[in-house]
Image (cartoon, rainbow, N blue to C red):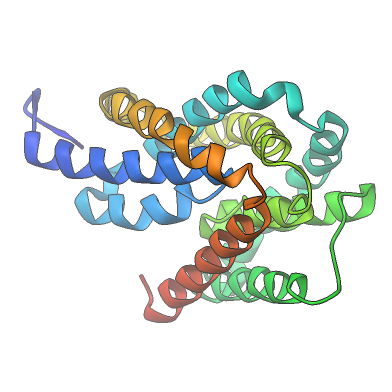
Length: 247
């Protein structure tokens, strides 16, 4: 963890904090991106920072985003997506056992990249009940097995306002993160040490979230869709590379 014998390791804290702040700034502006951008880098700093501390931080970020943009959320859409999230989480666990995390990560990355590519054509996915449930399944499975849960939902909302994208995804993340934390707690992964690490990194997360304000205003001026597609495609490519390299 970020402490050794009860003392904080300042070097590791500084590096991890910068990673978290950068991820929080991206997600605060676009609505997605923190988990996949930060998780592999945090694992290099200290493998114990994932998954539990990272999910706790993601939950804090989602709560902040809901406080800011929750009034714009599509709560009905969140409900449909959560309906798919629950079986998707179980599917992700099964996929890790049957397919291996690398193979499933590659599959999820290719699916997200394909949807992002199709979105550049005349085809536009829409947040309808059927598509939301399907995206929830992919999101739940991807978040559980490969650390990528936001893009499938974000792609459905790429043509709505930035505030609605961020508010909807943040609301979905709050509920989804509670499910994930409960699952981790049931197998002993939520410990005092993991909570301490999350607490130490929370000020960095809040800083990144606050810094996302100027970028958020720029994106809201007609740049939300390009930003969502860029972050979704980048996340997919990083996941494919990570899976191919076995990291």
